[in-house]
Length: 292
Image (tube, rainbow, N blue to C red; front, top):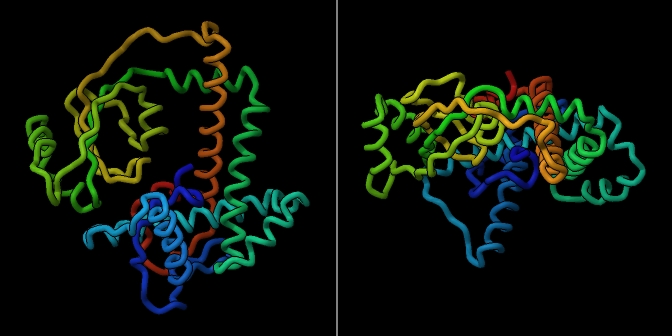
C-alpha cells in the first residue's frame, strides 16, 4: 500500500508559499500547504539519516515530487477517516497511541497518519487469518487467468519526460533508441524484461496491459514504483497453469500473504473512490485513476 503513510517518496519541500493556503479538503479535514511542507520535511530527514548525508534533487523533479506528496497525504487522511467510520479508532487499545500522535506538529492529521498505518496492518492480518479456501481459489484464478506477457519498462524522472518518450515511440525500433539514450536529462532507467500475467502486471506494477499483442507500446503511467513509465510487449505466452490443488503448504502460505496485500489495496482503492475530496488545486493526474 505504497500511497499510505511513510511510503510516500517525498524528496523536497516544493510547497513553500503562504502557510494557510488550502490544497484539499478530505472528508472535512483541511490539508494546507504547511501540512504538506511538514510531511515532506519528515521524509527528507528520514532519507538523510538513512544515507548519512543531506538529500537533494534536481529542480526539474521538484514539482512531480511535491504533487506525489500531496496525493500520498490525501490518501492517508482518506484512509484514516474510513477507519474511523468503521469503528477502528474506538478500540481502547489504540487510545493512548492516537492521543500521543495528535500532539504532533500536524495535530489531527498526525493522528490520522498513525491510524491509517495501524488499520492497514489490521486489514492485512485479518485477511490472512480469515481467508477461506474459496477466497484463495478465487484469488489463484485471478493470478493465473489469461496469457502471460513479457514486458520491458522504461522509467523516467518526470511525467513530462515519459510523455515525450511515448510520443516518439512508434515501434520497437523507436523504443530501443529511447532505451539507449546517453545518460542525462530525458534518459530512462531500463528494467529487465519480465514475464507476468495481466493481473499481476496491473496489481504489482500498476500497469494495465489490457489484452495486448506483441510489439504493443503503452504509457505513460505512474507505476507502483513511483516512477513514470512506458512499456513494450516483447512476447505473449499461452502456457499451462498449475492447478490450485497442486499447491503445497508453503506455496499456500505465500498465496495467503499475497491475498492479504491484495485485500489491503482493494480496501484503499474503494476508500479513494468514495472519499469526499475537494481539491483546491488541480487534482494530481497520478491520483485521478484511483478516484474514478
